[in-house]
Structure formats: C-alpha cells, structure tokens
Image (tube, rainbow, N blue to C red; front, side, top):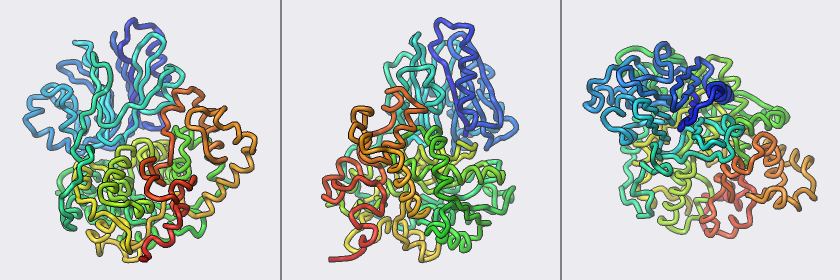
Length: 557
C-alpha cells in the first residue's frame, strides 16, 4: 500500500507546481516509506510514495506504459493480477515488472474506463494519458483505500490518498466515493459497482455453511499474496479469530506461486492490544495458542492513549467518537508491529456490517429491515472501520488487508437470505459464521458475544476518555456547541473534545464536512433508531451501552 498525489487539468502550468506536488506527497510519506517517485507532464504531475509488498525490487511507481506513455499511480493491491496477466484482455502488453498493479495499464489499452470491472482487490488510482491529455480516477467498490479530491484557486484538480495532503491547496476537499470512476470530460464520478442487493430487494440465496466457509477461505488465501513478512491481528473476537485460523491453514506455502513452494517466512506472528487485564488480550492468547501463531499481547495505558489522541485524529482525519476510541489502541499497536519488521497484516473488519453483528441488530423487527440496515452499514464502511484500519496502520507504514471485504465475498454474503443472518430469540449474532467455522477456533471464542474493539481492549479505556473530556470541556462550551460547530454539533463532551482537536488540524468547513454526522456506526444508523426506544435515547456508541443488549441479548422471554 502507498500514497498517491496528482495535479490534473494543469493549464496553465506554473514553475512551482512540481514543488507543490512534492510537498503534498511528503505529507503522506508515512504511507509509503520505501521509495518516492514523480512524473511531470504539461497536463499533469503524479507522485507516489511506496510501501513495497509485491515485487519489492522492480514495482516502483508511478508506472509507465513504455510504448504509449500512459502514467499510473496506485495505492492498493490487485489480488487477481496473475489471472488478468494471462487473459486476452492484456494480450500484447509489454509488462515491465511483476507488480500486481501494472495490469491496470494493460487493461486500460483494451478496455479504457471499463477496466474497473475486472479488478478484484483494494485500490485507488490515478491514470494519465499524455498523448490525449486524458485522465481517469477510480476507487475500490467499498472504499477500503482512502481517496480525496479538490480544486485549487485556478480550477485545477488535485487528488490524494489523505485529506491532509490537500487542505492547504484546496478549499473544497471532498471524499472520492467508493465504487466510482471518473474520467476527464465528465462532470463528476459515476458509480461502477452496482448490485441488486443494494436496491432493497430481499435476497433469497439459502445459507449453506460449506459455501460460506469456501468463499471466505478463498478470500483469505488471495489476501496472503505478497513478498514481505506479514502478521495477523487477533482481537479475541469471532471475526479476526476466524480470519487468523484460515490464514494459518495456508501459511506454510506461498500463495504467489499457487502453493508450489514453501513460505518465505514460515513463522507467523499475531498481535493483540489492550489495557492490563482486558478481555480481548485473554481471548486472543487462547486463539493464538490454538492456531499456532507466535503471539504478542501488547499493553497500553489510558494515559498513553490520551497522549496519542491528537496524533491519532490527525492521521485518521475524523472526529467520530467510536472511530477515535477504536483507532487509538490500533495506532499504538501498529507502531510496535512496525518495530518487529512486519509490513502487512490481516484483520477482521467488515463482518459485522455484512452479517448484522452489532448488538442493536437484535432489535431488527424483520428480515427486510435487517437487510436494509446491513446495506446501509456496508456502504458506509469507508468512513468508519475501513478508514480506521487503513489509516491507523498506515500511520506507521503497515498495510491492513480485510478479507471479509473482498468484492466476491461481499457479493456472496449480501445475497444470503437475511432471515438466516438474524440473531435474537436466544440466537447469537453472526451464527452463520460460527456454524461454518466450527472446529477452527476454540468453542469459547466461537461462542463469544460481540465486543466492539474499543470496549474489548478494556472497559476502563472508554471510561478514561469520558473522564478526560469531562475535565477539559466545560458545561458552558457544551451549551454553545451548536454555535461553534454548526455542522454536526457534538452531543457529548467527549465528542466536543475530539471535534476541537480535529479543528486544530483541519480548520476548514470543507474538511469537517468529510466526516459523517448522526449516530455513530458502532450503534446504529438513523433509520434503525425507529426499531426500539432504547436506541433513540442512547447517545453513547459503545456496544455495552445499547439498552442492556450486551448482557441479555440471548435471553428469551
């Protein structure tokens, strides 16, 4: 994974443009500490900061189609690149490297903007054809990889992986929407990832445990692609534990050559983090012992987390309460993982959205409402869990991969009959995953109730954050919160405290507008508030605060 910076529609060009692009790119060097590259043309300048994962020696970017001069900068991974290299769609292209991303240049020759339909992976890219002064930009279907854009005073278009690279250059910084592509001459990005499950119709595919197991196993296998040491994040919950258990069943052989050779790094390390005595640390240790990883249970203190808040908010680029609560221990963990030489990790984000794993889903009145809420959650992931996993890890140059959010697995999971996914009436959430992976992890983990990451690292963490905010935000400030912050005014002192820090780093109204308002993703969306009065009255997004569900979700009347 890496960072990209692009200046497009460069008319007229000015002598300082190259310096501006380099300065913008430098703001993102934490994402790509291994190498830097830049290519300049009259119509565009594209820069890249590289984190080398695949084809470490020859995959530097920006990449160049040596015959046609087309330039490409990519942040991400294309997991089906080998299949694409051998397909008719890339026939005749003179590949210059073993990089997974070079297939985008090859596909562009034969397919133009339609190439996005062929890509299976996580990515954001900018492509520029100097011969025709034509560009295109695209972002993966769910938005695993971040991407922002804006225009400067001269009306020129800027694109970057993180907002911080654009805020001094553009007044109108915006999120580039997931699953969209944009080409020069078009007014705005247009959606390319469009599925029936998004449209509200009730899916009817019957649940078969072996099919779910096979689909997720294939996704994990693809995500092990790479030429560098990797690790596994194990929170001790169901999702990350299942991902880790599957990965360990494929860890002995190299995925990149279809398992024909032994793994370059046969000992796989796993990581968890929490306060002393946290439930996650104990559960993660049990999982690691069962699946055979070299495990590292890392500790942090409440004060260490509080001390890191400003830096976390600068990196994550949000003031969302739940995201910051969860990002902080992940950010601290990433620094220690980096010190061990790990460059890529697998994580369990996405399962709760795909399968209705948050505890408030127990309140869903029927399968239709349940499905519609999962759709809202999946399509909102790019502003919450995806941003947290990507940016908190990339703050230290570590790539986070999320197999649950593989395009093919998403399309499978979201077409399952939602009645099969529903919990309640004594049934545990995500029962379909638990049944499919019986025997993969210890029964105590397989049947462990949902804990949000910010809860599981230790309940004292959230309490400590609240206490700290209470001491630094006055009642008078809260009374005037809507005056100071008219857009998405904070409802709690903790929210106010984070908003104030965010404003210090990103003072523009445009920056504040990139963060969604309303209920936190960890609790519910606005539509789901109608399910139960307990949701309407709850202003804290912690899972254990949702109407007592944390304690009695499985009891029957």
